[in-house]
Amino acid sequence: MAAIAASHAVSHVQNIIQRLQLGDKRLLLAVSGGADSMALAYIASRAVGPRNCIAVTVDHGFRPESAHEAAAVGRYMQKLGIQHEIRRLKWEEVQKPPVQRLEEVARQRRYTEIGNVCQTYQVSAVLTGHHSGDQAETFLFRFIRHSGIHGLSGMSLQTALPFALPAADNKTPVIVRPLLDFDKRTLYSICKAGGIEWFEDASNSDTRFKRNMLRQIIREADDDDRSPFNVSSLLKVRKAMQGHREVIDRGLASLLDKHATVRADLGVVELAAETDGQQLPRWASNPAVRERALASVVGWVNCKDHPPELAHLRQFEQLIVSFYKARKAGASIAQTSVSTAGVTMLPPTVRHGWLFCRQRPRANEIQITKDLALGATALWDGRLLICVQAKPGRSIPEAVTWRVYSQDAAMHKWADQLLEHRRVCRKTHRPADMHQAVLAVQPIISVKPVPDAQPTLAFAFGSVCAETLAATDLDISVRAVRGTDLVARN
Image: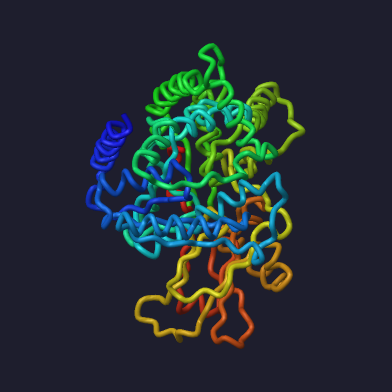
């Protein structure tokens, strides 16, 4: 039976690779050492050939045995003929988060390292071992977070790799989950039949983490056909939600094309405020469509790797509906903005519609980047891609470096220059005439001409500072990591 399951899995993965037009691409396998990812490596090596694969193991460094396990994964990859890399996270370089946020931060850092490997080898697709149990777990996790249809439709087969820089072709690498139709038992049986060693991470049983608690609930319910928490029951509801989402999404993209303006250079989205004689704007008139429109916009702005919670969307909706009710009645509303889910929504004015920007960061939330060479691209704040390079025909010393700051950090160094730059920008109607909430979350860039020199202000509030090296010799580009497509899959 295990041999048949393995053969079926190989054919299934081959079909997915061909359908996604990845047959001529080199694939990165995310292999943690668990049964699901070890089975993935075995299956992928037979589906596309070991020379077409690279494997990466991210060692979080939380457990003393993790280094040994990563090395064992490397030995099995060598046996399969797959090139393997180990990336160990160094927590002494960053402030270790509290236990409540440890999973989230570790996930972000893991994906960042995987993205770095994609950059090194110019890989465009990452295969993961997510299976049907993970899908059920994700559905239940999002359910208790009060996600809407967007979140309850679960994980998709393919989605953009979070926190990753674009490859040479300017496309962001994708995650592909080819094993979502297989259960954990099948993957265990493939490992056992193939003599594949795997490791059980003891931290996966720590119920202080919500996902582990939910995993335990599902595992206990899986032998009870009547339980609403077994995998089969959860996946049936998820599939129904996916169907609803697909119906709504068919018209959502064209609706947002007409009523949304994406400022990719600022990480801002503007939704039209005009009602055309109706009670609400066209994008907000249907509650289900309004929810999906807001979920798409909020997800684009905050760049999180999970959809926004329904409770957060309801806060945005409440202000929108109240605004138009008050306007119709000739009254004013006390609430002027909403900040939740990492996003601030500003009500319309005579100059703009509904503005959505990143919520103002907490103190020290955004770290100052290290010195970067000209031509390098940085992913700043997980949402903006920044590149500084010499203008065509300009000869710039190789020693020139640049850094990116948050506004709060930059104010400590260049308060007077920043205020003067904003005054000049207002006169010339450059981006600095936008709302303060938008300006507060824009990157500030400095340039250092030689290693021992003091850095000078080069770019702030969405525009280059006048009379600087940046204004005469450098091209500075800032763009959203998610491009301009608001309707994206998670």
